[in-house]
Image (cartoon, rainbow, N blue to C red; front, side, top):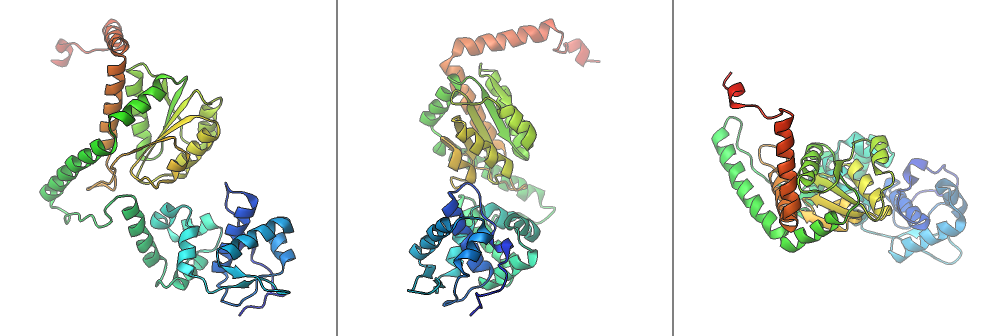
Length: 358
C-alpha cells in the first residue's frame, strides 16, 4: 500500500480532459491517477483538500467526482476514513479512458505521452502494468481492436515486394468489393437527405486533412457544377477559424476523414455542431470521433491495399451525390454546364486540335 499522507501529488497524473462537465472531468482525471500511480486494493486516496487543490476544483466538485468513482466500483467509502481503492479491472478501466484510441493505435510512444501530459517512461510502465511486454504489444492489441471495430481488416495480407501482378489483382478485387459495400451502406434515401440539406444551405464548406484535403477540393468543385455554393475550408486552426466565422444553422459543413481522423477534423466538426450547422461526416468507421458531432454519417470503405488508404469509394460517393443533385435540378445543372462550356470557348481556354497536333 502507498502512504497517502504527505507526499506531493504528481500533477501530471491529474491532467483533466476537455469537453465534459467539471465533475466528470475530475472523475476522469482521478481514474487516470489510479492507473498512473498503480494504487493497489485498500490504498487510500489522498486527503480531500490536496486532491481538490491538485485538480483546481472546489471540494463540492471533488466529492461529486469521488461519488462517481464509488458508483462505478473503483473506490469505496467507509465511515471516518478516506475513500479506498477497490480491486477493479485495470484493463477495463484503461479501455474506458481511451477517448481517442486512434492515437494509441497509430501514434508513437512520444505522441501518446504528449497527449496525456506524461513522460514516455510512464506510458511504457502503464503498458507493463496492464500485462503487456511494452508499448508496442499494447499498441498492436489496441490497433487490431480499433480496426475490427471500424469494420476494417487488421490482417490485410500484402504480397511480397516485387509481386506487382498479385498486388494489382488484389487491389482490383478490393476495389470492386469496396464499391459494393458503399452501395449497400449509402442508399438513395440517405443521398436524398444529404441533397435536401445542401439545396437549402446558405453556405457549404468542405474540410479534410491529409489525403482527405485533396478530396475536399474535388467534392467542392463537383458541388459547384450542380449549383451548390461550396468552398474548401483551409487547414490549420487559424485559417479554419476564419473560414468558419459566421457559420450557423443555415449552413452545412462536410468533413472527410477516411478511416484515420485527425485532430483538426474533430475540432472543425465540434465547432460546427456548436454553431448549429448541419454536419455531415464521410468516414470509414461508425465509431470515428467525428461522428459524435455529425447529424448525418456516410460510411465509406477506405482501407487500401498497396497504400494504407483508398480514395476510390469516396470519389464514387461524391459522383453519386452530385448525380442525384443534378437529377433533382436538371435545368440548373444543364445551364451551368453549358455556361461553363461557353466561357471556356470564349476565353480560349479549350485547346484546339491544331494546337494539340503541334
